[in-house]
Image (cartoon, rainbow, N blue to C red):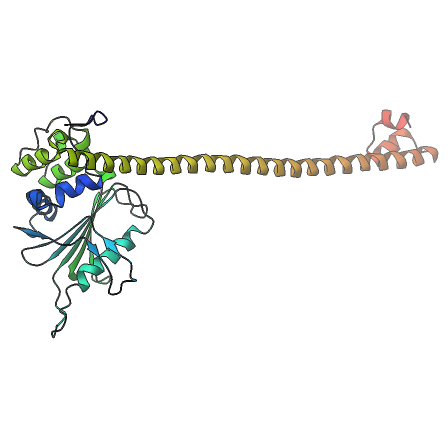
Length: 317
């Protein structure tokens, strides 16, 4: 049931619909658990997750609303928030920290004595752009509160994981770990026409089955097409802004260059004019002196020596 406008076999996970379909539904819980276990790489093992409400308000109705892409907790009650960030945002780090405050303060036990003990909170950002202020070539960044003197983790219950997708360049033949395979799928799923032979783990059976557009119901196909349109429009807006920025930069650079050239030309012209004017003034002064000396009866040779004029110039006076 693939629309004529859709030629891909599998969904684009960067669209809202596809990302939430694959990672944010009970039907595909197995996919989310598989991704998280690969991400944590044995540091912890998640056996089950419970999806939580993704829309949150502050303590007052006037507070800003926060809507998460995926929000869940594991069997230990630890909170996991996942954001698929499709376009660069100026204060993305600030936003991710702000979002982390919701699963933290929601743990406060109301109406009872509470000792402030918290369950761990994980904020995972899958970024379809590279962070401007991160020079490392690594695509995975794990951030915790750290003592800057000892460089040891000061508080291990708040973790931010940022995945810069444009920095992941491994081919299918270079996939060494299960996490590599997940990164490969996230980056290339919409371009694949067949399931790669390197991705034989059982969890990928479910992922490719859920991601196949031809298996969508009419309602899901329509929802995906609308989400894909929004994604493409967004990319077009970003590309247009970039091109306009480049064009404007080139135009401003050209104007500035012309202005600098004119100013430089004027400065050089003035300097040259002054130099030539001074030289001509000195020559005219020398002619006047030479004429006076000639009238006084000095020889041509003596006059030439005093004024610096040639004998021919003196004879012509």
